[in-house]
Image (tube, rainbow, N blue to C red; front, side, top):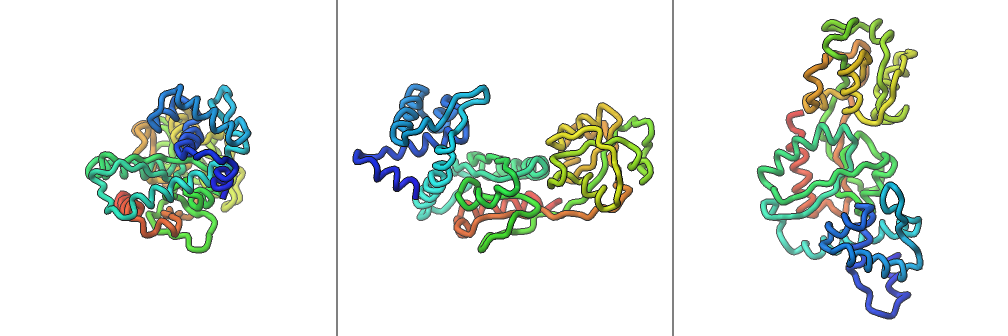
Length: 309
């Protein structure tokens, strides 16, 4: 293991707090923010980073306009260190019953922007009632990186449509959703209904890279062999809805995000005039966390949060 090798190379006692420092820097990409997350002043963090660089013989983090960016060596260390810290935390908590009402534990969940909009508001209401000290961190990754993040302990859970199957990977159905089309209320060519002909003729907003999970429009075009005009492509559904509310383009979105979007008050929510299959959203977790009381509790909260979908 990488950490064991790093300790063996140095005869002096190894300060395990340095692992917390490196992990915090990987998350925050800022010496000041990382120090706040682990309770160290900026001078102490800078000193810890100097010691880490000396131990590893590598700069580890380089200052850029976008913050402290990790070197390949830091990225190589990050996974094993995160896994070690998670195992250490699990060992400390293993003999104690998890009490959500008093816990201050932080959980990391892999979510797309659809998951953030559809799931997190519901989950936050449950946590406010029964677990006010629990913290949720939403993590964004490419879908092909979900499995690795679950395996190395970078994430506790994942909410997604489908991720690559792996031996023992656990999952549970959360909800099934359908697609709808959004247009501004005073759209000059759409008055309370949307025909297939109008759908083909209007300009659309694509969401996410072509072929990605968010690219519902691409799937509709492929399924019905349509040559749709994509007037704009954005990364997130929230941005797409705001653009639609201020222009004449259309966007195809999952139905469950509509209720959480304040901007939809100025939009028409229209049934798609072309058939597009529904999709299911699943909850995933690694088998080593299957019996963890805290992880079990959070899984139950997510299932409960999505029970009305």
